[in-house]
Each structure stands twice: as structure tokens, then as C-alpha cells.
Amino acid sequence: MPELSPGLPRVVQLSLRAAEYLGYQARIIDPDYGYLFEVSNGRAKRCFVGGMSPLNDAVGARIAQDKFYTAMLLADRGFRVTEGVRCLRADYFRVDDFSDRAGPHPGIDLAHRVGYPVIVKPNRMALGRDVVAVYDEASLVQAIETVWKGDYLALVQRVACGADVRLDFLDGTFLAGYRRRPVSVVGNGHDSIQSLLARLDRRFGDEDYFGRRRSEPIWRERVVSRGWDVNTVLPEGETLSFESPVLNLNRWATAEVLDDVPERWLRFCLSVAEGMHLRHFGLDLRIPVQGDGSDWMDMDPHSTVIIEVNASPALVQLHDLGHADKAIAGQARVMRAAFDG
Image (cartoon, rainbow, N blue to C red; front, side, top):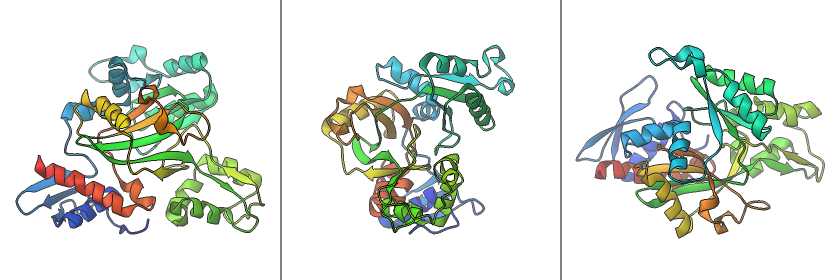
């Protein structure tokens, strides 16, 4: 993607740019993969691993890695969370044996109760990997088994509707945020599908990124099945939408970047993290609104459904959306805080 060089993990590249921004010195300790690196501010040295935040309570960060436990804890504190169940892989357990409770049946029961579609996702993985909306029992079981290949615990959740918002914070202040939207373009009779997509979101102008998106089932469903390809010129007024219950910037979603949030939203989000002892965190929220969701800030924050808490929020997506300066400055704030204690 633009402005970050190949050869190192992108989250590490952003950290190196932040170190340069601060006038700090950085060196890669792991020459093969690049995830382990050291930064010096001239007075002290600090090691970092990938995008892992060095600022949070260890137990709080561990809970945040566990989506089910995060929801359980927040529900106990009175927050609204996604209704869901966990489906355990039977052959995982070696010491504590929960095999009598393993299998896909909790997810099947939930889907029968709340209705399809439901969301299936790994309990601990990130970046939207293996997160899908499923519409029948056969697809549900298949999705759970796919998750089990990389995580012993699959979550099945009720679909949460509303404006999809991500908000990141550092030491009681707003750090970054955006409102996700489905990718959707309207033909003008002379531009190709790829041109329309790249005009909407510059990431589609990058062939590697666009190639990954074209490998997803929704591309085959919405484009290939109609006899179209990247060079197809959409007729004027023809809408091509990739709307889905799953919105993730590593998938078929785009975003509107936010400069700040109102004070009541700041207070609400900080109250979520307070009980988990997180200084640096991100919240994925679904806010019940009417229409296109543009008025989500006017809603009562306590009406929102908390989808996930991230204890190591990365700013790479902010960079790739065309806000490199904000991403580097934000990452620099995190790095400076790591040295300030």
C-alpha cells in the first residue's frame, strides 16, 4: 500500500515511522520476520512486539483477547453486548476436560432461537479472519469447523444492527476513529468497476489489496455471477453493493474517518475500559439508528451494543485510508506514552 515500504509487517513499519517522527532510534531484532524490535529515546530502550500495546494491565489485555470473556465481563457491568454462544472443539483439551460440552450444538440452538443470519467468528483471532455471516445450518456448521482449524473456540452471535463505529483511546483522550460502511458504487456509463471502487476508497487502486478482495465469496456472488469483471463498465444508475452483516476494513467495507467524538461518547467509552484497566484500547460498536447512520453521535451512548474491545488497536487502516499523518502522529503518541510510564 502507498507510503509504507515492503519487507516488514505493516504495523511495525508504522511504528518505525512513529519513532522517526519522535526523533527516536529503532532497530529490528528479528531479521527474519521483523516483529521484534527495539526503540531508544536517547535515555531508555524499550522492546516492542508487532502492534502489541505496552500500556495495558496484563489481565485486562488478556481478557480483551477473549471475545466471549470480554462480553461476559461487560454484560456483568451493565453494558449492552452481542448475544452469543461459544462452540468448543472437542479434541483441544488436555487437562481440564470439557468434551461433554463441545461441538456445534450451542450455535445451532442459538440460530434456531434468534433466526438466521448469525455471525460466526474465532474467539481470539483478529483482522476479520474467518468471520462470516451464515444463513443456514449447513453453512453454520461448516463455518464453525473452519474456525476450529485456527482456534479451539468458535463464537456464534446474533447479528447486531446499526451504525458500525470504531473508536480508539489513549490515557483518557480520543486517539482515532471511523464509521464503517459497506462498499457500494453507482455506475456512470463510462467508468469500470475497478475505477469506481478506487474512487470510493483508494485501497482498491492497489492490486494486492484488490486481489485479496476479489478472492472472497462476495465478489463471486455480486460480480462474477453476473458475468462482470474488474473492467466491466456499469451502466448509468446501476448500483453494485457489497453490503453484508460483516463490516471489516480488511474485507468489503470502507470508512469515514472521525476527528473527535462528543464528550458524552468519550465518557461512555472510558467507562467501558475502566473496569478492564486499559489505558490504550479500541471499541467496535453498533449503534441503533435510523436511515444511513450519519446521526449516530446524537444517540444515547448507553443504547450502543459493544461488539469487541481491542487492547492493542493498530492505526494501519487509518494510514491506508489516506490519513498517514494522523496514523503516524497517533502511533507516536502511543510510543511516547510507553516511555513516559
